[in-house]
Amino acid sequence: MRLCRFKLGVLAAFSGAAAVAPAQELPDSFSLARFVPGDVWMVVHNVHNPERDFIQQQWAEVWQAAKDAKLDQGILLALQSDEDANKKDADKKSVQTPLDKMIGLVGGVAWDDIVAEETVFAERRAKSGVGYDYIFLARGAEGSGAANFEGLVRLIEGARPML
Image (cartoon, rainbow, N blue to C red; front, side, top):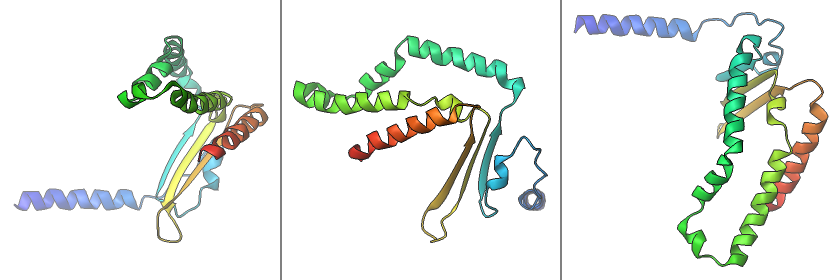
């Protein structure tokens, strides 16, 4: 019993020390973290690392193979229930047309470019005490902002009637 208390005491001491450990000064490459409010309870921060380019290339090949195999279409078909098979063709078309529109709008944004250089995600309790505030910041690839902004506007405007 004494040994168990000792272990719990050591664990509590180390847990407390980690909880109050001060944050280190950020290098200049981590510019977005400076905009995160001080009252968040969680921050996930990612910055481009040239040493990971090889891994990114491997993932790009995996995603390209999935696209070539039309995996996205297979997933959509798998999500359709047996009830969908019993619907009339007109009902299927009324569902498929907005779905095709949304897929096209999502494809109009270069998502990799949006988060190419740096991303920050943070969460905190809402000031009202009910729910949470989510903060997402991104620094994308140079020169990609205008086209992606237009694509995101089209996506939001296209989704608005469906909400």
